[in-house]
Image (cartoon, rainbow, N blue to C red; front, side):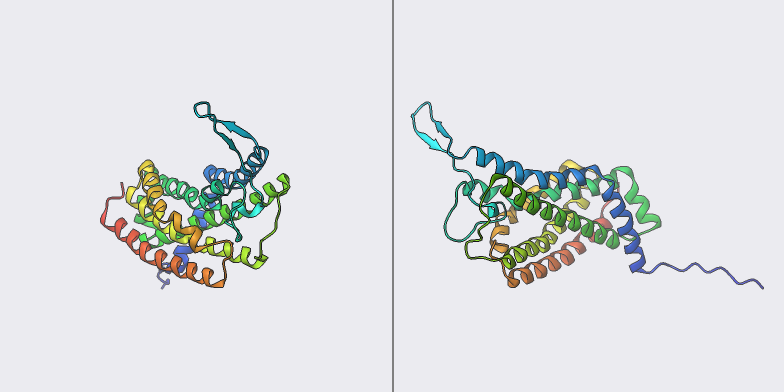
Length: 268
């Protein structure tokens, strides 16, 4: 008697691994991924060079005759955060337009990446024959986190290049290289908080990319001002631990919420 063929149900780890392979392949073939990485790399270079070229230029208000002297950056690390020891040239602009913009940039990637699944019908087919909703949320969160981490690294590289091109100082004002490393690690792990928020909003909006982007940017702005306080340029190991704990809690809690949204709403 021939042995009966048995079909084994793939274990969860294998299903998640399969989902991650597919999503990573899609990410590496996505134009928006490379556009965002390129923007994160080029933006600090352009900002630093242009602000340095405008340093010392005077603008006159035609109505009042008041003169305003433009101050350019004095330190390459202003793109990453505020250094101790007082404000530097152009610091007001760099306090808002700095590396933390990457947290908002990754919202575009996550929203478009997820909305494309629902717009093409891929998500409905996936949940029917292959993966479960929880595994889908895990995969999207991980891919979004990797994209955000790469954007932060690209912005750091661009900041260093921009500072070198403009001939700015790399003086850390009492800090050390370890603080820079801890600052970047804290920002990378904090990215998980934002990606979890963007994933929840995106699975709720589904194919409506415009709605998910608007909602994600609005939700992200509620926490945006806290990023510089949680991950300062003088970060220590404590900041990294807090960001890891916060990222894990948000990923677990909002991941469960995203799974519930997918279960209780239509997939079209």
